[in-house]
Image: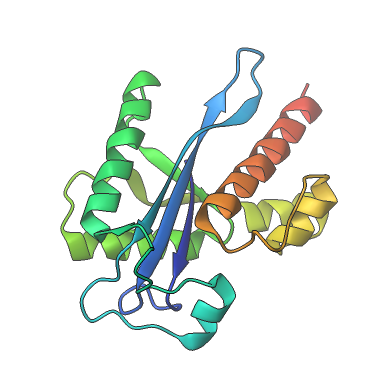
Length: 187
């Protein structure tokens, strides 16, 4: 499952989780991978959360805008995990593996939010992940998401960047392309 988060800073234990998006990776009948169903949630900052002005400037998120359709962190994760567990059951999986561009960052924010909200049924493996920054560095010589997508021939609109939904969708496309490329190479 591709996960992308947008946050109020870089510290998962103190800084707000502001958006989370997920894209399922689906196995097609021909054996290729393709992005599947997706979800996105705007998240209300937890009480006492910190914000770095530079992070908010990059994402363009105003955490307290009155028209921002944000929900509580626990509610967002509960809704997201319900959908992921449904997909896991349909595919006879016991754990989801997080795919992310700089997956360590996303996994740390996800795990911190899970601990904060005391969610007991986390569908994700607690430390395993696939990192598209690393994969793209190996395959395309690029680790920055926009540059890796361009090298892969996948469209990139920098004005849409740093939206969890947009970045998750593009990361899913990149992951599938890299995996499908290796599958073709192996015959």
